[in-house]
Length: 203
Image (tube, rainbow, N blue to C red):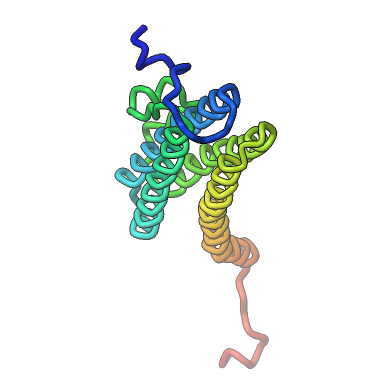
C-alpha cells in the first residue's frame, strides 16, 4: 500500500494530543464524514424529486438542509486534517464507510421524502451524540465541542422534519373529519321520509 494511503500515516502537527488518541479520533471523524456525505446526497435526491402540494416548502427545506450538511462536512474534514489525518470524502469512499441505509428509490410525494429523511437523520443524530462521549472520554475537548455543535444543529433539523409530519397528519385528520360527518348524517337520514306535522306544510 502506498504510504500516503495508509490511514496510520499521520501528518506532523504541533497539537499536543498523543498519537494514539489522534488516530482514534481521526477514525471517528472519518466515519462521521462518510455518513455526512452520504446523508447530504440523500437530501439532494429528495430535493430534486419531491412532488405534491407541499413542493415549494419542502424543496426549500431540503435545499437548506443540504447546504447545512455541506458546512458540516467541511467542519468535520477540517478537524480531521488538523489532527494530522487525510479526509477521505469522495462519493465512492463515503459509500464504502457510511452506515446509513440506502434511500428508497420510488418516492415522489412529500410525506414519503420527509419520513425517509427523518428515518436517516435520527440514527445520524444518535451517532453524533455517541461521538461526543467518545471524544470526551479520550479528552479531546476540541472534537467533543465540534460534535456537540453538530448534534445541536442536527437535532433541530430532525425537529423540523417531525414538525412537518405532525402538521401533515393533523391536516389529513381535518380533511377526513367533514367527510366522516357527512357520512354519519347520510346514514341517519337514509330511508327516512321527513314530513312536517299536519297543517304546517300547507296541506
